[in-house]
Picture 1 (cartoon, rainbow, N blue to C red):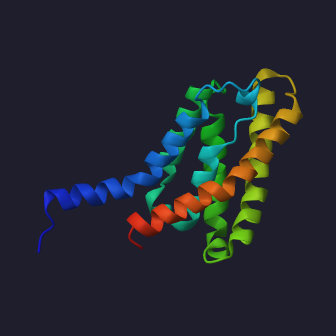
Picture 2 (picture 1 turned 60 degrees about the horizontal axis):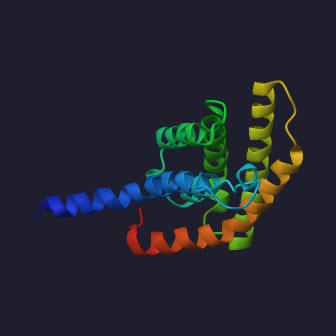
Length: 171
């Protein structure tokens, strides 16, 4: 039986949710807060999403989407153009290369993997932005941002797994 238009639209919408969620997290990252200085240490929420979806559903998070998400993050945060786009693509490549190892592992192993990848990504962002401005940026902000990102990972990772189980059919 041929699927109806509504079934096709439903399938398309479900397949778009990882990219849409990641874009939404970029917007959440730039929402103003009443916490002084928080903008400098806001967790890299999109990085968590890219890491998760690249492990569990890389077919729904293609490299071109990751590039666009990174470019959108740069635009929204005022980061020099291309920094997040490049870093997100580097993370994507690293995770794809280790995907076989990460799939099916315990949460602790996945989290430790993110700790390594997230640390390297945060350091790369710091290096690129410092090079762009020809000045070393304060590494304390980098450290706090990394620790906040690492701390948020379990919450977002759990939410993504619940979404995946409820709405995304396996490959």
